[in-house]
Image 1 (cartoon, rainbow, N blue to C red):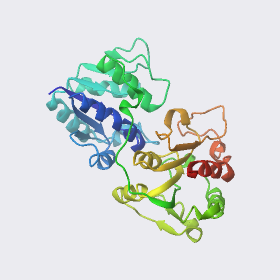
Image 2: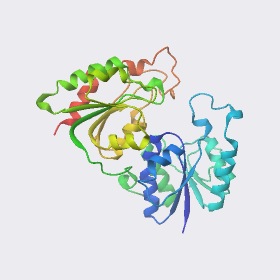
Image 3: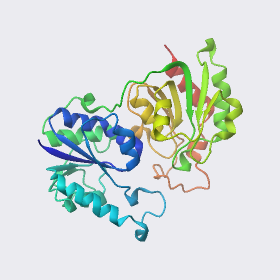
Length: 327
């Protein structure tokens, strides 16, 4: 069987958005391997059958200290490179346009490297996709797959998805955390939103639940909500995300996971651009962050506090909630 390697070792949301591309290649008769973080494998493996998983926590994906090479897991890197080389993949695919990623296939003996070039002269991409790079992550995968398969594809052919969740009508879940603190909407705004949700007409919102972040961010809202989820494992969090009618959260992995389970979502953006990173689907609403001359800043804010997300009001988010819950 033909074998191809997918490279996507950044965030949980990134690999969720790549799930449609993986299934697309499997439908085309390819045996697909995926190089990703261990936590991404834990999320995806139960829902993407038949893939071969290779895990390595790539050091340059961390927000701080990425070039502290003396702290890198060199033994783990050599292990995964040998593991991938033994699989004899015919080609690799990545949408990042990141020269650091382009070296990895060559170190694994892969000579057909499909992707987007950072520079026109860059030699390590042997097959460059010509469409999709300026658009949403899913459209990047769409353009790359058209290049790889050498034919046009319907847009939804590589739409992401995990499973159909069993949702409880009237349950609104708030996910208040984010891996980067500049993406966190302030606690006082969440409190204002909860008050507005309580006022939703007709008893449409029956229960409000909340998932705290790993560092406890969100505990301050305990007295304002009905159910608080603390210290959840990834599996437990996925179960909760897939069981609610609506998930409101920051620009982070959980809103992508919820959308992939078919839940309605409202995502609050700050430094990133919704047109590139929003959860995929016609039930996914977004609230853009306020304008800033540095956007997108890749989470390295130029100010003492991230004005782009602090400036988003509770009324703006509630308006999107109302639109999402309309019959």
